[in-house]
Amino acid sequence: MYQILKGELNSPSKFKGKLLDYIKELRKTIKGKYHIDFDDEELGELLLSSCRSNDFNIIQKKQNKMFLDEEKVLEWLDKKLLPSTVIIRLDNEDVIRLLIFCIEITYQMFAGGTRATLTSKGFRERRRTFESILVDQFVGKLGEVMVKKILENNFPSIKIELDWKISRQIDEYGNDIVNAKKKVSIKSSPTLTGIWWDANVGYDYGIAVKCSVPQQPILQFFIEVCGFTRLLDFAENKIPSYDDLFRDYLINMRERIKKYKCGEIQTDLKGVVCGYFKTSEYKPVKQGTILPYFGEVREERYLVPINELKWEKDSWRKFLQEVELL
Image (cartoon, rainbow, N blue to C red; front, side):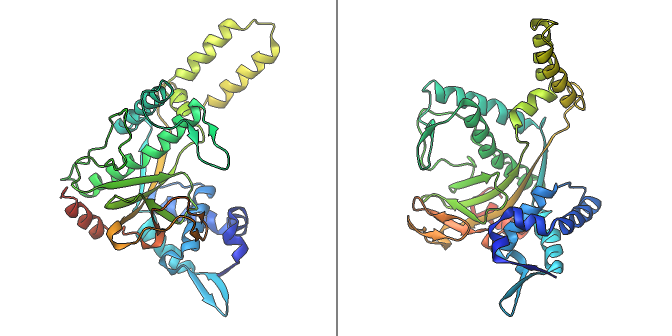
């Protein structure tokens, strides 16, 4: 067993550094059995999340010391993480819809066509760039596509309808599954180490999704559908042959993308549909509450630890029945 220190639970870099060899062995096990290739960073952060929340009791305490139970880790992988993982190619029909939707809604936001904010909340409000809003929209909405895929795969008789309409008004309790009879909030995050999931007051259910996407998901689209190559061709025609500096830049860029054949989609998007919770079974967490690995709650809402989410197939069946989709 590996001893786990509190400082390592608080520091993803220390945690992953200590367990790097173990994580690499887990990756081999996963790839050989399930053909799912998490990288070291992804798997290390997902494992850290489960250690922080003690999902599947993978942390054992002995004489005030914490140890990683490797048998429980394998059980967590086999029963929960891997069956809940969704792999979607960039050319998936709903991912293409997602890209077009995110570009259009971001344009409308900058043109004043929606009520969505252009500033980010933090210590100081700052105006977000077009690109940062576009990526935020993409990651935020990607979780909905992941939920649709996993539920329709597991329950072929159902049809999940997502909300692709752009409105001038913000619907405070908009339903993320538009054909569900209850209010469902789907929240996705690129932060794989998180252990709390939220839903605003007014929703009946919250669904949690962790998304792993390329650092530059929008640029990756254009690389793989030839748009980036055409940009480089255009630049080469415009930049004089004697400009060695920029010629070198263009050579470097072509070298960087040479493994991508024009029009051949290679990139996968990974998501872990962590589960759902029913808000009637919880009380909203008050503003100002301090939660471990989260910090201060900025506004009152439901916040549920990831190890309490319902994720088994029978639980999802019950969810679909309660929202009248099954």
